[in-house]
Image (cartoon, rainbow, N blue to C red; front, side, top):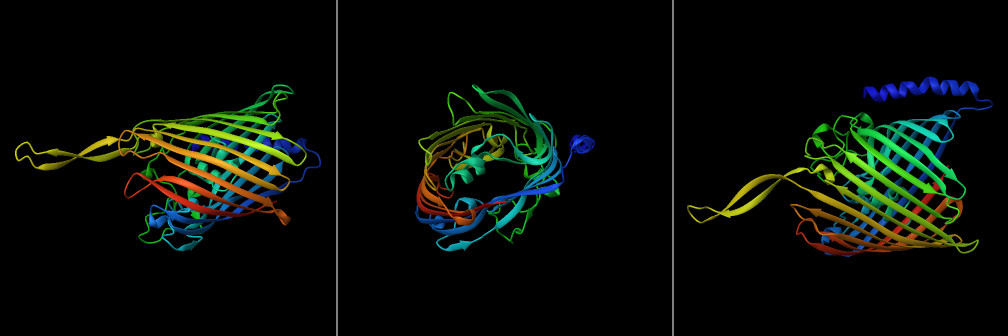
Length: 406
């Protein structure tokens, strides 16, 4: 924590100097809200527990306290259910659930300083700038599923973004970097909801600890992200890209450093003043996913003396290469939109094998008065079955009522 506190302290005098040179500026609070009320109705599934209807709140409230023209305190309050799989429909077990395990937590709280027009520095708690799809995928569940896999949340450290190159023909290219550790402070605690007795399906319910392990949970600032973004190409208007590299150290339950790679592309073709088509794609891969955690496996053999079958426990680690892929297209006509997306989650493991999951989502939506929007869709899924193993099939109807405001 000492390097981080030193960085925070260094920001303050520089911000004060900027205040002296500003004329006519008044400190103010800026806010932005992006919330959605989601309903996932699983009409059929191989596992009975997945059938049923789940309704929950998912989204965020962002606020920035601007103390000077180039210095501010930024925060993001996230809302989502915190049970295992609940943000994607969960296990309503044939019934209907409303806001089950609904919670809120500080996804980000950091100081931001812009020493010049091309540079932004941050220090505090943030989402490391690795992937992009979890923030801007269109559709209903596509963004949430990406967030579950590749959003590097609970990151406590320092980050910076700088415009490397800007040209009217070749576009603008920004480089971002972050050095961080997994946040174990009280800021990682959840709000509104606490774990109920004997319910083991909570993914998080209090502050992070060293004992929970996981990649990045090292207690040291030895985790990093490096990313490159570009857009504004004169020869390809509407094209943008994102490339990212991630490395995280092993926590107490891990045995190797995790590495992540991502590349994302977006291209929007405008056909007329009212019609346009967006093509989007992102691929993410983790080597030594979850930092190669330790595990025990059971080996079956024969007793050499009696010939009877015996079980032997073997301590080993799970070597996993996880690849998450998204391909999609959205067409807009005025205030109406239609989205089609495919996502695949492939996990190749040395032990405790998991099948490859595939999801196809189709939806239509429109903007409504007073900053409201509504989207309705259908999802076909081939998912990994927890209890019996192998692949299961499910069909679900999706609905999202959204609101964006300031």
